[in-house]
Length: 232
Image (cartoon, rainbow, N blue to C red; front, side):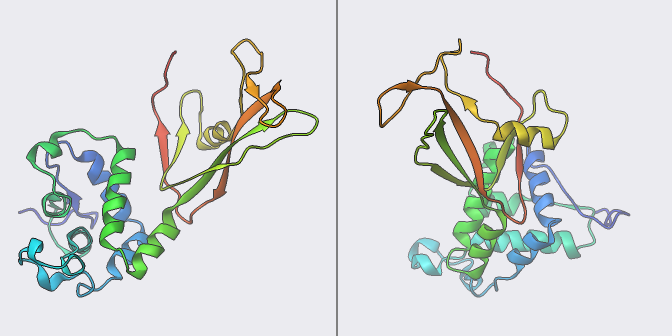
């Protein structure tokens, strides 16, 4: 077994094709606010005493919350152990229930972020940590249609809560340009400049735009990169 690297940091070994997952876990670990929230819940509240018992015979609220417990264990290993690297095997198998073939699938990091956070939040349900984690990471956007008429009409907005804001990459040299593009209204026309939106009150076809607004930004914002575009 090799000793901890000269950098003082502990690595995560790949289980198969889990480099994307390791990068996400290391990013979480290196975020003090996230790490503090994970540590803040006592093993007693996570039913650690019931590890090893038949979970099917236990009431649901007494079953060990393995994802949260194993994430605490992994972070503790990264912080305190003297080894050069450690494994995520317990977290993926005993926590998330992955099988051997699952770790050989190259997942999309945006999809994985959603899956991991859903699991972590489920296993923190009913604790102060769940609420703190949502407040720290959740971004709220709203999409609506706005007419370009003398008396503008704005449709009822559709709110979307997520833990990652997806931004375009193609044609943009920096994140500021990407964010400006994301906020740019989309003209609703037939491709030849003719409007296609029917005003819900007058029934007339009028010029309109589909817009998006960010209603709430979290203290820690995760950005996902739209690396693919479709040619229709």
